[in-house]
Length: 145
Image (tube, rainbow, N blue to C red; front, side, top):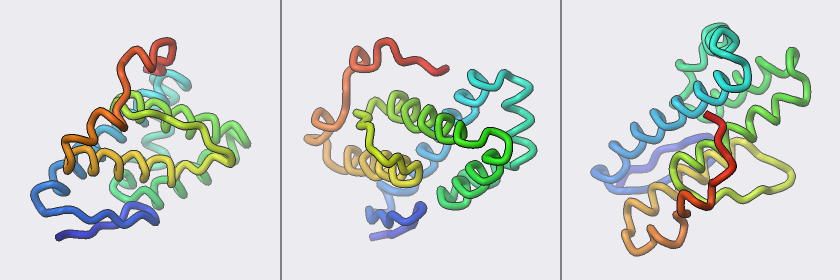
């Protein structure tokens, strides 16, 4: 068994399950962040934020990413930074075909870590795939990218 931490959540899985999925999840997360920023801020705005905050360097550690993203953009966007975080969380769930549940207060780290944990669980237990997964029709009308 291997354990690794993503923010405050520790996930355990076998070597064969965790390594490829973690890489896939980080790539999915990176694509989601880039696309949401590109849609909301435009190509140049997204590139500026990604470069200025060096977001690509923080994608492997969710806690670090959150601190960099949230506190780096808060002086500019004020409370609207939470809107960007919600859009990223929703689009991440859509891309992974996972059900998204709105929770108050919104906690970006928990939301993204829970998505990764659910994906790990789905990969480990094929019978669980239909329970947590949603149909593409569940996401009709929501398209950030």
